[in-house]
Every structure is written in structure tokens, then in C-alpha cells.
Image (cartoon, rainbow, N blue to C red):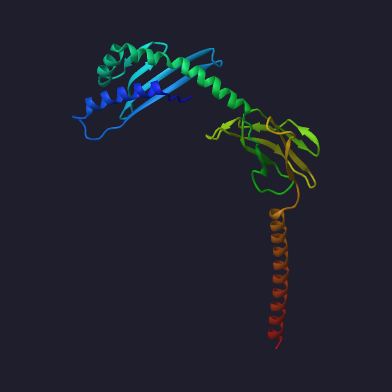
Length: 252
């Protein structure tokens, strides 16, 4: 969790101003960054604050609440380490960030626990094959929060547990999740497959349905076979007419 507060901002400005004064004469262009992080184990049972000073994509200084002081990671960071550790107020402010982390966790936890986003469910086959051949159904569930999702497959009302595979939870990067749950199957005409999704945001499960029927692939295949048969018939008729005409020509 990224924490930005007034005290963190003061520390950041102090470190960055010192860094700019150090490198301004040696380089015309440079990039400087600071990162403030809170790390939690078992909620707020164990809280760690880490502050990082980064110069040209290289971390040069770090404050770790478990160490309790600023530590230089490169030579460029050593004068800043000495400056920050020599200022009692700066050290106290850095050490106090653990309490800020804990308070922020309590605040955000209440929001996380209340937040519910319903999943979107789509069911489709992984490839186009004729009925009676092995295939795979995919139940794509996305956009849900939190991650407590349960997905079950049914064939004609009977639950299927064999041949079920899952990607597990995938983070969408926007505080929602997605997952794919696959079912290996050999569809027969009239089979109805359903993907049932249960989630804490839903009062009732969401059902995705896929029916085994002659679709465009089967129709195209049948049309192709029919066209081939008609083509052979016309070819045979044409050949017979041609041979008959040749015989008539020879008789004359």
C-alpha cells in the first residue's frame, strides 16, 4: 500500500532537495523518485514501513522501520544518510510512519469489506469442431471483487467434476479479478452445459449456458459435402454426354 502523508512529504522534500543540490552540478538531466510503502502480515499484527529514495532508477537510500534509521545503498546516498540520521526530528517522523500505516490499514479494510462488484460471465467453446469430437468449454468470469468466487459445471443438470481446470484468480489491475474455468467434454446433440457462478456480490448464482447443436461449422461441413456430391453428379452427367457425343461423331 502506498502511503502519502504530511510527514512523509516533508521527509521527501528534504531528501530530494539535498539530492538535487548534490547532483545539479554534475548532470543536466536526471530522474529522482521517492516511494513510501506499508507492508502487513496477518492484518496489523505486524506492520513495516519502508521509504525509498531512487535516483535514475537506482535505489540509493532506504528507511526501514525494522532497522530504525536511514541506510545508504550507494555512495551517492551516503551524504543524505548522514544528514537524515543526524536530525532527530527526521528520524522520529520516519519511525512514526508505522502508526500511519496501521491507521490507514484500518480505514481501508472497512472499505474493502464493504466493496462488492458483480462478475460478468461468458461461456464459449475453445475450438470449432463437429459434435461427437473432444472439445473444451471455457467459462470466463471477470470484473468481480472480492476474490471469493465459486464456479461449478453442469451437464444436463448433473454436476461435472472430472475434466475441470482453472487458471485461479488473476488480478485485473483495477481492484477486480478474473478467472477461467475449463471443462473437457465430448458434446452430443441436445446436450446443455451450464457454468454456475456464486459470489458474495450476488443474491442468486449467475448461470452461463452452452448448448450442443449443429452450428455454423456443421452447416458449412454439410453444405460442403452436399456441394461435392452435386459436383460429382454434374461431372458424371457431363462426362456421359461427352462420351455419347463422341460415339455419335465416330459413327458418322
